Length: 358
Image 1: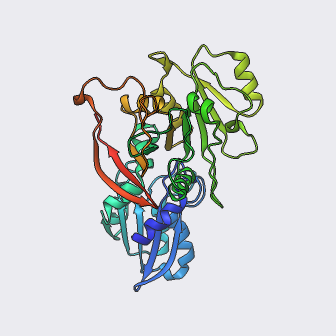
Image 2 (image 1 turned 180 degrees about the vertical axis):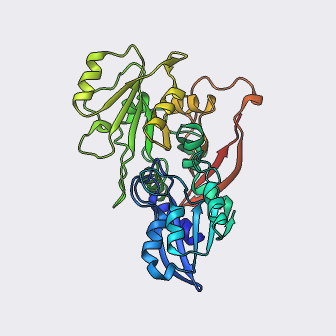
Image 3 (image 1 turned 120 degrees about the vertical axis):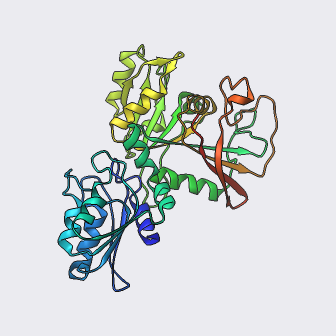
């Protein structure tokens, strides 16, 4: 199953809105086939693993990170392929929350006489498929907030200078996240201050959809985020009163602009997530800035945080911190994190944690 999990990760950011599943076929203790779901509309992991195994799949067992599908979509159900291959034992990690599956895959295979074992490395499988689970159950993408700061919590000097807070290893990991998540999101303030490209600079990596939250459509041209030569595309979310002429000019250079309702005078972030979910976006890397980050946090829209801390102190009462906005007025309203995990990236540390639902 651990091998299947490693395979599954290869499909992250590419298989959406389908889950990035990994599968391994074993016969007499030998791996005879393996596969992962690489792109929506293409064969699923189980089918690819069975094809590779060929006749050696007969009488063997298949290990899958997610319960095999039992419905007809753009591809035939995987349960059919498993039966036709002569598999005798099916082992999967997480049950599929998809209403069209809802336990049907495992139950169907068991009804046909196959031995079915579920819940193997279930916590690891749930973690691996957390983007898909959030999208299929809520219709919204999973939101991962990433922030880099000094040990005293500053994301830039009072002058605005922020290059570079963290080291090369941390920045490389962030590009891995850009490669794995479906979209990356920033606010108009970050765009004005840094003019970021928001691309993945890893060799062989892919660019996420670049999302800009800009209520008044204040974006100035040229902007790196609008570079049409970079794959991935750019979507700008603005308010209902944004200039049609500005929308037309942005559309002409390849951007997609969507008008969304307002909440407290700014783009309704819940409506943005709903819109992205309908586009098949299952995960978002939220990179800021501080005001947008707090808006997401305060509205209960963040699922996970990745906080990078560099061993530096910068001080300054006016230097920006990790979260901006108006803040919470009482400690009792503070957002709670659970089961934090600490990782080292060279001299930096990263705290990764899920956000407890409020």
